[in-house]
Length: 199
Image (cartoon, rainbow, N blue to C red; front, side, top):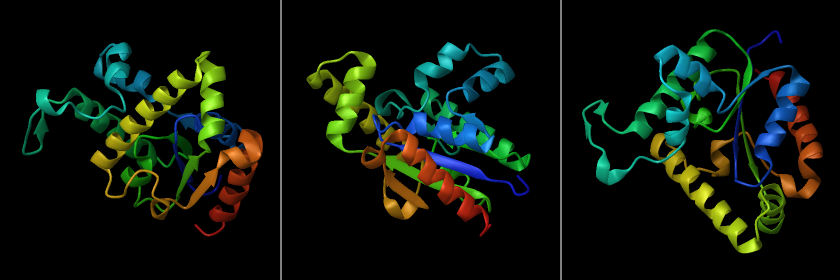
């Protein structure tokens, strides 16, 4: 691409947001960043990646962490800031990429080439997807969705001025349950292509 494009994709758990992000990145020939960025961070910081994964995209534990000025002993916050710095470095390098989650629509909000998208879904479709993917009964699937979305909301709202899932925070919000992952990815790609022309 001639212009730098950064596609930030937020998603509800079970909405197929990650699957859609993979399709968009592949079709546009862009690198996809998600949990894989932890491998680079772990290598750079000489930390076991499993340690980072344990606390990644989690809200801080209020009763076991402290913040004094700009300093914190919260592992969750330290890892979050590592990821935010990583994204800023990638953006500063001029690279175009797709990023899933990590408050990217807020962290990179001042970048001219940022396109922010939020993927949601109908409850019944999300439940069925999680039941099939993880071989869970309906009760356990509902609990898993609620738990993941609660953590994502807490994490996002901790580091962002806007609220997680608030349509005013994104360029495009789309319900993947209406067309399914493949056609939703096509709609998003068409939007991105049109949006690039305005950058």
